[in-house]
Image 1: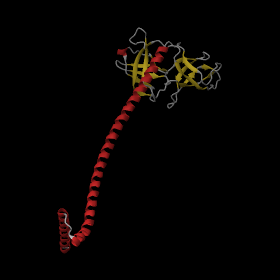
Image 2: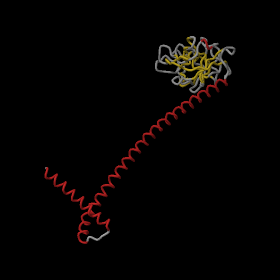
Image 3: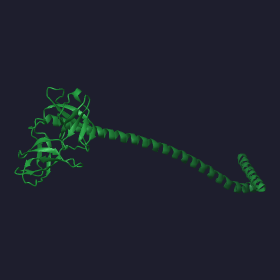
Image 4: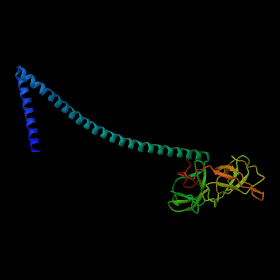
Amino acid sequence: MRNAKRTGLIGMLALLLLLLFFHAGEDRKTDSGVVHRVLASIVHPVQYLLTGLTDGLASAWYGYIDLVDARKEADEFRARNRILGQRIQELESAERENARLRNLLNMARRHPLGYLPTRVIGTDILGQFRTVTISNGSRDGVRLSAPVLDADGIVGKVLDVYPSYARVLLMIDPNSSIDGVIRRTGARGIVKGNNKNDDLSCVFAFSLSLEDVKVGDVIESSGLDQQFPPDLVIGEVVEVIRSESGMFQEPNIRPRVDFTRLRELLVVVPSGGEGRRP
C-alpha cells in the first residue's frame, strides 16, 4: 500500500514537472524540437482533462448556487401566495357580509318599522328549544316577545332578555306560533315548528280542508296575533297533508329564512323606542 502511494506521488510530481517545463518553453517562445513535441503530446491531453474538470466543477457550483436561489425564490413566492390567498378570503367574506347587510336594509325599507340591528353570537338549533343568542339586550331596548327578522323574513321572537344579550325562539321550534295567511287566497292558519328533531321546516296548522292551499303558495304573517307585523314572509308550501278526520289540512312549509346561516338580524322595537329606521 505504501509503495502504491509512493508511486502515485512520484507520478504526480513528474507530471507537474512536465507541465512546468512545457510552460517554460512556451514563455521563451523557442522550438524545442522533438522533445517539445513529445512533451506537448503528453501534456495537452492532461491540460484538456484538467480544464474540463475545472469547468465542470465551476458549472456544478454555479448550478448549486442557482438552485439555492431558485428554492429561496419559490419559498418567497409560496409565502406571498398564502398571504394573497388569505387576503382574497377576507375580501370575499367582507363582500358576503356587505351583501347580507344590503339585503337586510332593503327588507327594512320595504317594512318601515322600528328596528334594532343585532348579531347572532350563539346557536342551539337542535336543542330542547330551537334558539339563537343575539348580541343586544334590555340595555339596548330589546323586549320580551319582540319579533326578530332577517333579510328573507321572520326568524322568531325574543324568548329571554338579559342586560347585554337575549335569546330568540326560532320560528321552527314546535313551541312557536305565528298567525299566518296565504298570500294568494287569504286562507288563515297557525305556523308552528315541526316536531321532528332533524327537520327545520314548519307546518300550517288548523287550516280547514275547505281552504284552497296549493304547493308553492307563499305564507305571510297576518298581524292578527298582535305580535308580528303583517305581510312579513314566512315561507312557502311544499306539501299538503289532509288530517284523518278530514276537517283540517296541515301543509308543510319550507321557511324562507335559512336557519343554518343566521348572521345579522333585526329586532323589531316600538317606533318611539331605542331602535332606528334604516
